[in-house]
Image 1 (tube, rainbow, N blue to C red):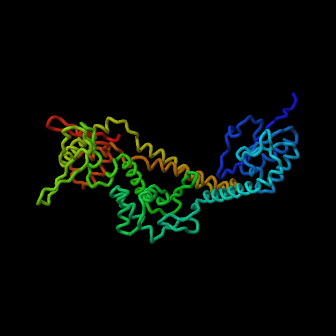
Image 2 (cartoon, helix red, strand yellow):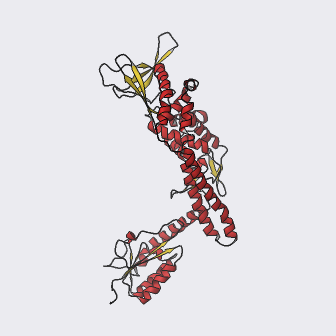
Image 3 (spheres, rainbow, N blue to C red):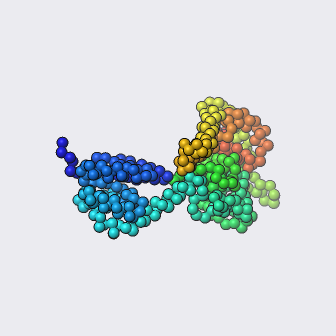
Amino acid sequence: MPPDPNKTFAYSYNDPLFESVPDASVWGQKVDRVYQDLGSRHQLNQLFQDCQNEIVAYLLVRRLDELGDSIQEVGDRLAQLEHLGIHLIAIEEKIGSTDQPLRRSDLLYLLQTVQDNQRKRRLRQGHARNRMKALPPPGKAPYGYRRGKDRYVVDRATAPVVKEFFEHFILYGSLRGSVRHLQKKYNKRISASTGKRWLTSLVYRGDLLYHNGEVIQDTHIPILSREEAAQVDRLLRRNRRMPPRTASSPRSLSGLVICDTCQSPMKVSRVSKPRSNKDYLYLCPTACPNQPKCRSIAYAQVLEQTIERICQDLPRAVSGTPLPDVDKIKQGLNAQIEAKQQVLERLPALVNSEVLDEETAEWRSYKVRTEIAKLKAQLAQLPPVNLQVVAQVVSISQFWLDLSESERRFYFREFIRQIQIVRQEQDWQIQLVFIF
């Protein structure tokens, strides 16, 4: 069989520190053979050897800078391709085509592009090496920290402000309330969006999140403990279910009650009697379309019936709901974490015995630590205690009566999604909708 005069080869170079091998579909056409290099150029040398023994019409690359680490190397390889009569096509840079292949003289015009790409690659390589060593990313340290030699260091002047913000949010569950608290106590002005970033930032938990989405835990001293961080995450998830402006309400029923007749949410209204210091609380529909409108109900009566219903309904709801075995799941995750910790402990011995070189050990350590971070994230999302055990404790009415309104608010929102007021002719009843 005569040789194919239009034989096409493809070549890609990837740095394993921050790149993955491209999919075969990236070339956009039929390719007779693909050469791929990871960190070295062995396959590129093999490509040129094969081209000396075979007739090849086209060579596809993604970018010109993949042909070498310097302008001189790229120029030398372009000269080799020209000598072999092979037309080069850089598909991502839209350079060359089967109709108008790249000429060596075009390199003068493309010199700046190649230099820019190689400079970007060197920067990414530097950042990737810093990630392997768990060094902080470039840029200014977050508020509450300052940059140390190889990690973030707690700033004693500003860290108490951040700590106070977290403590206030955990206590009251209000983002905007915590922002106002900082302004009032420390004269520290931040926006609500900045406060939201603080609450979700992994830096304050002692971890580093890199631009590629990978997380390494315990890289520096945290301002927020693991237990506090889990509580913050639960409050954020819970607040997303609540109507606006009810997350920080002082009343435990705020944002939970809805009228079953008109489907209107019910807000807490306070009424004071003339020439009296006593206030009366009512739950009123906010957007009742009925005429006459659904009447208001005394807050204390709804609270009393809610406690009675939760004591009766919660144990039955928990026993009738298939719940995962949290303890078993935790044991499985902890076993995986422990196994990966043992891998980390063995790496120094493998380096000392020259089974692994230093760079490979660093790369392996980085990958294992990111895997541990993912497992710990799964562990943190699990309920802190067994729901069936908790249901028995909170099914005692005295438990609820001994709590303050803010404490009741916290526990109500842990279990209840909605409190429905079911109206009858002259009476009404409570119906609870649980979150599970």
